Every structure is written in C-alpha cells, then in structure tokens.
Image 1 (cartoon, rainbow, N blue to C red):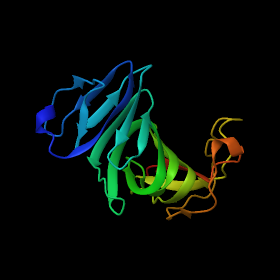
Image 2 (cartoon, rainbow, N blue to C red):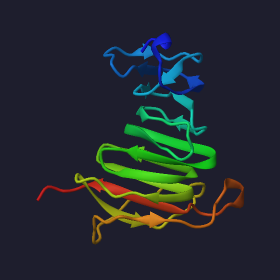
Image 3 (cartoon, rainbow, N blue to C red):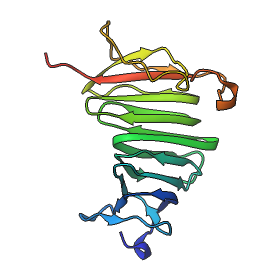
Image 4 (cartoon, rainbow, N blue to C red):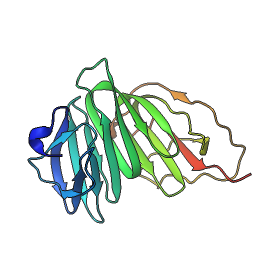
Length: 200
C-alpha cells in the first residue's frame, strides 16, 4: 500500500535486519520494507531466513518477529479499551508492552485472546504454541487442532518441552497470576501447545 494512502495506521518499524517485506491489504506484490515505512491496517509482514524485525503498533505494543515469520495486521486500535487483532501464519513473535492491552492472535491451530504485557506465540508446520510471561489468556484451539497444557519451565535452562502421547481434550484454558519478569528468574506463567488433530 502506498504510504500516502494509509488511512488507518497500524504502526511502524522499530528495526529491520536482513530480508523483510511488506504487502498491502489490496496488493499482490511484496515490497522491501524500509525503516521509514508506516504500517497500515491489513498489511502483511514477511521476514526471511536469518532475518529479524520489530514493529511498534499504535496501541504501544512492541512485536518482535523471528526469521521465517509471516504476520498480518488485521485490525490494530490505539484505544486501550479496544481489542486489536493480528494473524500469525507461520514463524514466531514476541510482544512487550508497558500497560496491558487486549490483543487477539489467530493462527491455523489456535485463536488466543491475550490481556497482558509479555507473551510469545509460535506456529510450526503442524502445531502452535503460546507462552505467557505476564498476563492472562483465553486460547481455545481451532477445529483443526486439539490441545494439551504443558507445565511451564524456564526457557533459559532448557528448550520448550515437546508434547507426548496422553489424553487430549479441546477445552478453553484460562490463566492468570502474578507477573513474572526476566530478572526474577521465575518460570513462565503458562505454556500451552496445540497440535494438529489426527485424521479419524
């Protein structure tokens, strides 16, 4: 989308490293992202191999995009009482914000409604996961997935645990509690993993 046609601003780039592209809501072609670019409602950001990007949304949330990540800014509101919506097609994002905001993150396997200040969402080929460090989340799996709650462990000490065979259920999971910040060396508030449902 041309910059002068951006009637509904969604945010701007805070940093760009490597191959980062943007596609407007009504455009087919990708264009190379520039630090001066404004991001608009409906824009899709694509981060390539060995690349990184960070965006600051109009609701003051900072979202860091890992390599091989594709994210769409569906509806971003600067009003604290409004819920914003982003879609994560693949890859991983991490969000920081000083004050809690309402944010929904849709993926092929889960739709998470988050109210907090720090969280991570990742999408792999057949699975998606959400890690809440501070805040609460309502995250039912989609009809394509089944869910299992995984006890949270500190990501500094070991990689995220893989789900293993057990009794699965498609239930809504809520979580809330005291905040955990990096310097406290406490485990994340919640970790949940969703895997694609097997064929009957």
